[in-house]
Image (cartoon, rainbow over all chains, first blue to last red; front, top):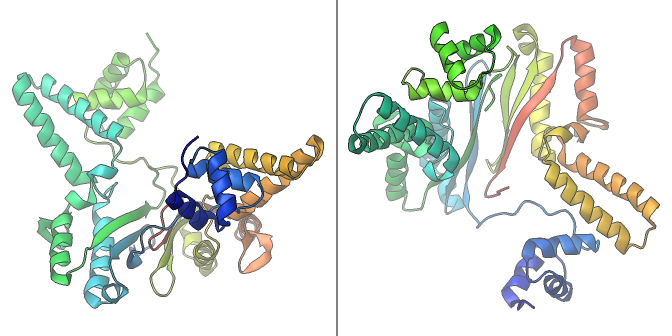
Length: 200
Length: 200
């Protein structure tokens, strides 16, 4: 039988709002598996549908940019550490700039880590095929593939893109600069970009 | 060898902008598989990265609702058939109402069809467990499960939700009513809802 730690019980209590003894029993019944313990409590009629979990108490802003004509719109969440910074003009301008940049450049992901690894593999195989068809020797081909993947990241990943308001720096550079100026960790956590009639 | 129809060739030409003979050859090399033919042409260095495909020439609006305080925001696309209707006050008010409704009720999907079938199965199994634990006989249990699933849809699916501005009708009813009044097919195709710090 899995050992049920106090911290696991506490986490289950936080997720469900159910008392300690019931949480402990649920964890014992499900070998300490939190997700299954939630289901177990729900099956007992004790817990309601889980609300989506909230992360660390991040601050920041949710903002949007709707291009005139209403055929293109962006929703973005940018984060900082304190509500104080979130209210500054500097940070609010940053959020606006990022939303407008996304509308202009239409990235598909925040960063490389959030791209589907299968998609990257797929691109890589196509670049390799291209290099072969161009008659490049194998050691050169690898370099060409890397170069084209870099270019692919710059087209698809927000953090890798050249910032439309200052193309000399990437969005990542822009975020780093702002972090240094403000003295708080600044990040872009997610965005949606809708173009009328377009589908993924 | 798969037969390559004229319509498949035409579709590949539309997706890649490449000439007919090259498209035909690509389809022959890939047994008429459109996706693989695109990759083949890219491998030959002939086609660029595909743009996301656009659907039927739908009209409509992309709009947003940002709740005061910038901790909650919604982006939504609503569709109609003509640009003329998209510009009417009636339709623009509809788009605004839907965005505000989503912010208030936070559905997770547009309709039942867009819910993950595994999620539905998971909910069903929990409701069945609940009914068993309540000591209900099997024939009654099925009815209870159906009823609770209906309630789940009303909580999670936009089209099933009671419209916040007029709780006597569902969003679906509201859309149907508008369709009848305007005389064009009206639909809500997608939305995003971001609450600061919250993750799926």
